[in-house]
Image 1 (cartoon, rainbow, N blue to C red):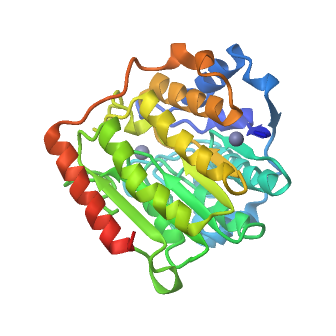
Image 2 (cartoon, rainbow, N blue to C red):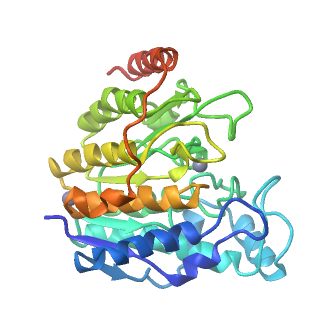
Length: 348
Ligand SMILES: [Zn+2]
Ligand SMILES: [Zn+2]
């Protein structure tokens, strides 16, 4: 019923920026350890990503950019964008492994698995010709493109604290992929996009959905937005596969984002998608993403995988935050206004 595959390669761990850079791969290793300790791997298979296929990057990235990353990866220094994504030795190889993980995940769904997990994926900021926001290659968009070979309609639900701007831009005119991003939106906050009126272009018009949330949005208001926007849209679109980008930086302990989700809030979101998916094909690809409180991120991912496996809640109780979080009355009111506007724009 929940035939699940966990796609993993130790080479993912090499994708970890040096020095005091906030993006560290021990989030992934800790989540895996939590899962091992609780016997998750008796309930799911582990698979390595398919062999590297560099040409798959060209589905969403320019040849020049791919060559540039390769060169920088050998040099091991400098920047891959204009800001905060430094090069390091082997960055090309480890980033490509992560992409292959997400691609393999969607292929395995097509081959009969119900759920696939790639915690190395979810690098949603990478653009056509540039890295961005710690993301070198956009595995989310690449996996969606690969998925279009097998599935007529794919939905991406992005709950990272930041807007999924790269994924949006790379698939902006694509009506076969419904892109929904919920994120913190605030003056000066990265990446600065993700407004309600960004809805897609050409044939893709209406298939990009943004839910910009104010700082301070906690479980109650976030779940309200989810129930009133995400669930009705998924119901209407009837995706044959759902990709969840589950960045852990919407957690209340994250140092870079001021959203206030708890592990229980995250779980509530995944549960809703999981239930909805099983009313259709059941196919879910769960990806990682941001997350700068490493333990909170590892816990978020572990409780989410437990849900996909259909494990008893008690198995992961010790990893949960105490309780669901509450938004102030003011924030609740603002989120309700955002939801009304999104509903109007998308005819829900
Ligand atoms: Zn299931
Ligand atoms: Zn993020």
